[in-house]
Length: 417
Image (cartoon, rainbow, N blue to C red; front, side, top):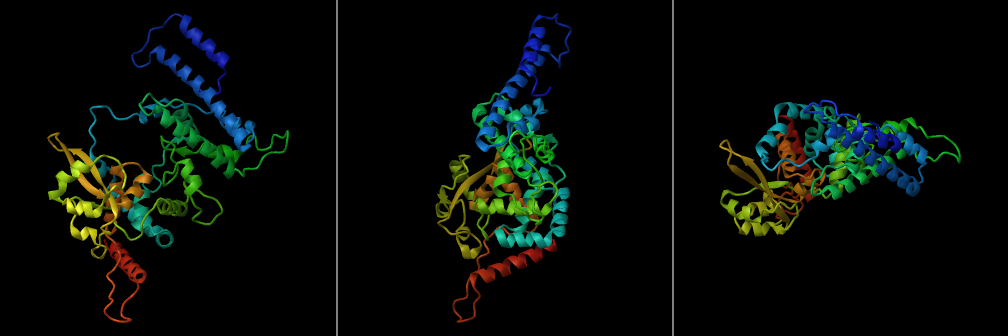
């Protein structure tokens, strides 16, 4: 049922449902749900129209163009179920999650994607400081390099979640998030369509094919678009024209996707040449458990974690492939049930670069999977700052030169794996 059904018709339909004889019902199709769906459609339609009017006024976009673009928008009940939190009996399973993404088919596809885009990936790594393996890992985990980009219309997804998010403790915040993304989508599509206002009293651009095509493009059930699964706000802020054709196409252009991922990570604080995470030492598991609070915030120094036995001294030493002992970190807990169903946890120390990956997808499981996928492609999870030979005058290379040399060597090795 489309969103722009008139309210008079809705009232009549609801009255009919209330007064007509009740026919036999099937257990999976109760009449009460039909009335509820109609009420939801009416509420979504009204709220959507209000948002379109607001955007029209604040952004000076003709209201007729917006109304035309959303004329056939509809809610998708299945999406409301997909965004629900897991049930109380659900157990998070890090091992099952990891197995889903770090597996032969996806890794093989990753190596092929790297080979096909080798020169451009290297260029983006040089420009952004983000390793090739990390970029390849992110796109692989997100969509298997474009094979799984979602099959919902993005305007339907965002309208549904903005105005009929399911009843959850964070409903208000989540609806506001998707309202903001819906506004970002409108601005993104208007810009892609040329962003020009029609002449006064003109119908020009009211039915812009490019504007409508952008609103109707496919997305995930959360509204993420293209190979790297960017939300509309991220497309507007961080997406790049990697192939130089004058437009950004995250659905069909691998170069646009690669450049955009590199730019996103760079702008969210990726530290070139630094590790992502360290496994907690066996003797430090108890201490790590006490510090694990589920908050992705850099709050403990590496030296503190060394003192507690969570890390080794070498991991707080740049020259040993670690990080500076004054660097900040946090505890990452990855729960899973063992084969007997008992709760177990694998612990890591998340460093700055781990937190950067979390900015891409707010999940510890996701971030550690990216790290391990990248390692499977040849990424070396250690600093690339070399020991300078200061004992011989003129006999040492600069840190940056030796850093590049080490990264080049690591990359060549990864090609043989």
